[in-house]
Image (cartoon, rainbow, N blue to C red; front, side, top):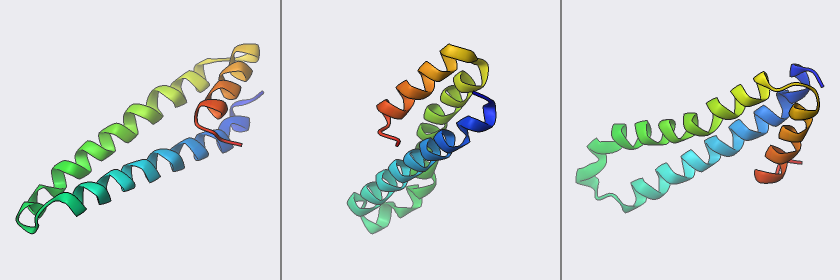
Length: 84
């Protein structure tokens, strides 16, 4: 399996992470009173940090693995994040 074969999985993982981050942001904004909206920058930062914590190590692991290890990792990640 070559690196480009991982592109659909990486895209799916990014999509999942972005959707979760957006959901967390909307929930936080819905709960925050109007006076607290100035804190939106903090919430956005927190959301992006969570996104990066998921994506960076996953992408690096896929990049560094090869052969059977990469195939096992792809299967595990797809199962873990329910990617088809």
